Image 1 (tube, rainbow, N blue to C red):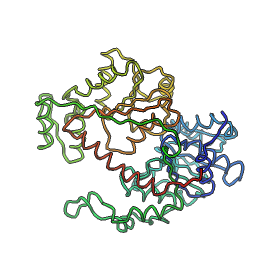
Image 2 (image 1 turned 30 degrees about the vertical axis):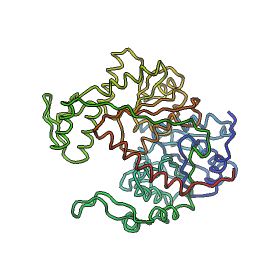
Image 3 (image 1 turned 60 degrees about the vertical axis):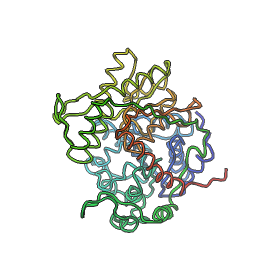
Image 4 (image 1 turned 90 degrees about the horizontal axis):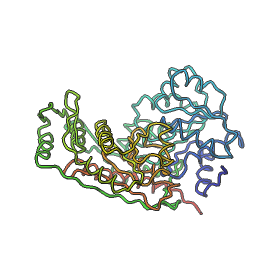
Length: 454
């Protein structure tokens, strides 16, 4: 297919070519893969500034999205690529194959650097979903930092750079510029821009930005960062977000409140214990969804309110395709059981074949887990309605999952995102938290937005 880029795509590709270190914050649906590949193609074959590049991406994106984009566009026909995913034998064979671009999943970065025995002689690194390197203590971050001084060019791509707050940015930009802008050490960054927030004695659980810190941080990174929002450059379909509220019965409500207050719930099928606040949050989320894991590991069913709501939503669709996001394994099991009982065809989106079938309109109901399929997958051809059966605290996974449908190429004029919310439970707090986190995310995107003369 002939590549006819939008002006913003030309601008972004040129930005990557002109900046050896670049953070490209492209909103979902703007075509970051084709933009980056165009820049790589120019750097390889026009200016000859690089000779060997590596792309680090989420597994499914590495396996499916990057190769598909290379094969799709005529102007990339000269690019030779090799996909280093799968077994160790398959990865080694792929890395030893002659290619211009090597594509590897992020889980294997440490293996590549420390165990593979393959020389890290890439002169350009592309990190697709830079936000997955926000933890400076992770093995993948430390492994890649060892190799960073050897790399002449690096670009980080993401639509959600600060999904959990400004603290995320330090590791991401340390990987890009080796600490030049936000400091070489996390302690320096924390002291300079933040104050302790929630704490218990000497133990600090969270930090909040100092007055004016956001603007200072954005100013420091602005010379290597561009940001673009899809709503600025594309005729995006209307996005409608709704809530489908369900209510617990009085006995169900008492069980929920008892666990919340006492951290221990005794049920006929087993005991449920929450050892700390994080565990309690997870247990309450499970109960809001309709089931909870007992201390023994068994699943205890609490209610079927959300399952009934999902059944109503499917019926109201009148046969139109529906994408359902679940969070817990018991959510999947119970949804699957209900769909079997209703004799409704469905499939989990976990393979290239299932994704192809969804986009071809062959799957009436598709089940997706945000953590495994949130990034990079193009699902807009299969439908325009998403239902959140179980919610996630992660703004990044939330936005990325919504963007599987609400993106360029969506033929429907409207994308509907429905959230099944159990009233009076932690579901309501999660929805509020996602909304509040988005303010920081939007502030960052706006602060470094590229001003294009289009």
